[in-house]
Length: 93
Image (cartoon, rainbow, N blue to C red; front, top):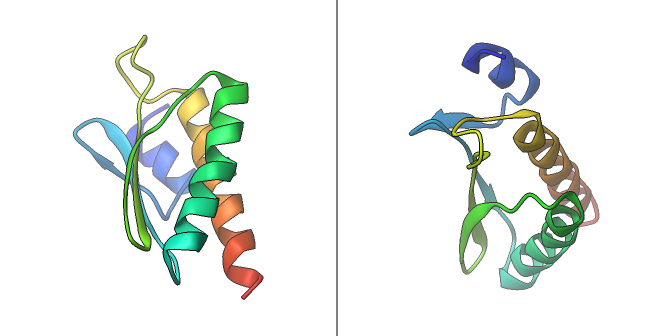
């Protein structure tokens, strides 16, 4: 799948340094931490772990399949799960 095909599926994401990237901004730290907890459980079940960081209400995520050296279907699936978690957390406000 090409970069442009990936970004059509995931318009909120970008590709930076050959990694799928997105910044999620929440109302506060608790909401950001809850997102990371939910996404972490899914990532563990998938055995596919993100590169991510958190500062207060912001979570920065980078996804790549290290064993393949590129963005794979696993990254797209995890990004989709993260989008859904984010959307659900925002709509509960």
